[in-house]
Amino acid sequence: MRRLLMMLAAIAALPLASQAQGLALVDRIVAVVSKEVITASELARAIAAAERQLRRQGTPAPERAVLERQMLERMILDKAQLQLARETGIRVDELQVDRAVQRIAQNNNMTLPDFRRALERDGVPFDAWRQELRDQILLSRLREREVDDKIQVSDTEVDLFLEEMKRQPAERAEYDLAHVVVRIPEQASPERIDEARGRAEKARAEARAGGDFGNLAATYSDATDALQGGALGWRAHDRLPELYAATAAQLNPGEVSEVLRSPAGFHVLKLVARRGASAQGEPVPQTRLRHILVRTSEVVSESDARRRLADLRERIVSGKADFAEMARVHSDDATAARGGELDWVFAGDTVPDFERAYVELKTGEVSQPVRTPFGYHLIQVLERRSADLSPERRRMQARVALRERKSDEAYQEWLRQLRDQTYVELRLEER
Image (cartoon, rainbow, N blue to C red; front, side, top):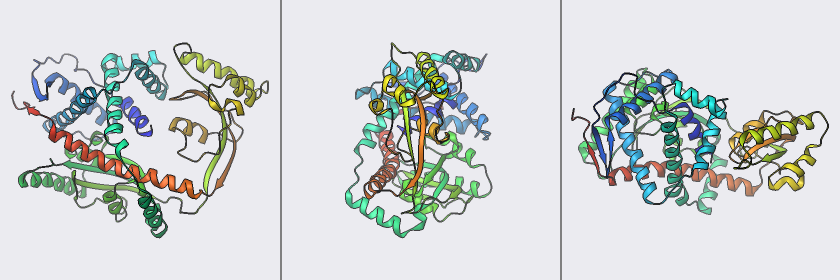
């Protein structure tokens, strides 16, 4: 769920761009992917979107020919995944897309009509943007089924992980990282491997010479986050792939690694910043809270849910109604019977939108209506404390960390295998 929410937020920042006004293209095929094609106009729209995103980030764009090749390869990989998803029966229904659109509009502090008008002012057809959103949800579900759901973590691995965490202080650090990934096919020839290594070495040399790392990622990286500057964001040491974790621990902020090799290809890693994390055995924050949930449906619209909760909040804050009593009567959640009260929660126990809202509240304060995948909530913080993690919970967190670490590595390898198995005919040079 966290990965999907983060992906939706990224889509809000990267709409599909339409052809520039007045641009006339005689459409032609630039690639064949299995039984489908990618046209020059599709590629032009993707390049325009990429250039627009890079400008918003303040990242210098690669040379046009480089960006063209990079975007075409990413489109090929996306199309191969979408084909597999459709062939194997993965579907995304209209209601799920509608809810995702509403969420993105809300995250941009807009009503849906305002958000639609903003897209159109930017030259982005709403229907095309909505289809892109559907495709990204489909890709997320495909990854969950083909990669994440197949990852196994044994009790022995958990035991070893917890022992290592006790011995190694570095294991408790968090890193803000960016990377370049140069993939190589599974049965690559020595010449192809040397070519990929050369690209990675060039990226590393330019980065160490002071080159803009975001530009280098957009130029050289085959990773899906290349247009975000290769930014991985803040990651706990134990949630990084082992190759990255071991390397990051040896870098100082601002430093760039040597070229690293994994089964998926070559990597260049930059440590942007480092910070400490809670040591094993240290108390961690907990929050006791309660909430009122109004689920949206064909009967209860988004605006109806917000209005109902706004009315309830006004009555509660003014002292005319009791929160627990209102939860028992109005909440659609299973916690309604106990006045909306949740058990003590740790960071990460709830979905990100819910957590962001309650973290900002003072004790006793009632939130404004908060949107999550489940509907709209009113949240009230009752109490905060620091508490030790139970052994059971510590094992659960270790298992989650190991799954995340394996997931990133497995996903990159799965993408490489899918690309190798897909019939692709390139026609980009046919002008």
